[in-house]
Length: 224
Ligand code: CA
Image (tube, rainbow, N blue to C red):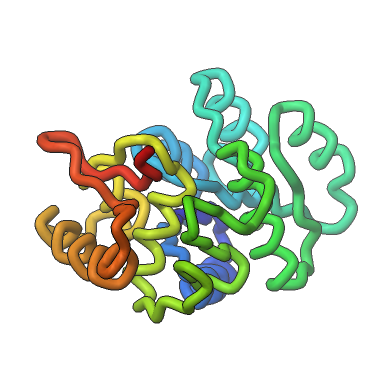
């Protein structure tokens, strides 16, 4: 999953990025309002963490512009103490949640994950496809009750496919959601990871779950 962090305190933004990376996220950072709005409109994110007080355009205005353009990505607002009015304004403009500063990082991660799950219409942290279970809390997967050891990137790709199960996902979309923006990448790398995943998840099972859709991408689904 990929998030955008719009926060002008550079140290805080970098700490957030590092922390989220330890939870299998990738993160882009913007330190000012105008750039943050541009990135949010231009690239595809699974969630946005938005500070309110920003140089250029403030967080409330960014949120308002996004919602006007029907960009319905989950947005979590970071609010300083005493910004009660801003919290209300944020929620009224369509924020999914707000996090008062100073915040507990584990709670922030949990809230971001929860906002993403609500947005994809899957409230449970466990995603089940046939006898494959993907646990988005522990970042683990099991098939037929057996743990499947996965690298961080393998897990990220599996989680994205599982979160959008039964939908064809293009290589470009996968790259957009599991690599940082501007990461110079040949889309063939996705095929390599899909091969690794097939070996770990489908090998030895009659019922294959990962399917190639020629000319379109990949789909994770149970076949009848
Ligand atoms: Ca700020």
